[in-house]
Length: 136
Image (cartoon, rainbow, N blue to C red):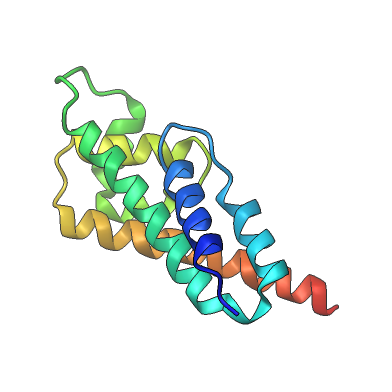
């Protein structure tokens, strides 16, 4: 049975993990799947949505930053464009990329799409690896 309280906690953990606040969405997802093995699809949808929305909050905050000289990381992101947001799943780097995307004022739709794809891929790989390890 899919527990709404578990999914709410999973969403909150994923949301916080995508901001500069501490969170551990991977551990929360694995715990959820351990106790609710039938809830894979809802869990993946919830954790991806929460993490993407948390990342979009960081993008929004980045849009409020004052103009400043561009460093190497910003120049790299600018050269690659919104596709670089596929890497927002990386610890620390992902938060910075979200902020840079906002600071560079990239279009919301492109930002959301690439971020969603990167974050969903991470959780799919994590869930697949956990399933493989448990089944092995």
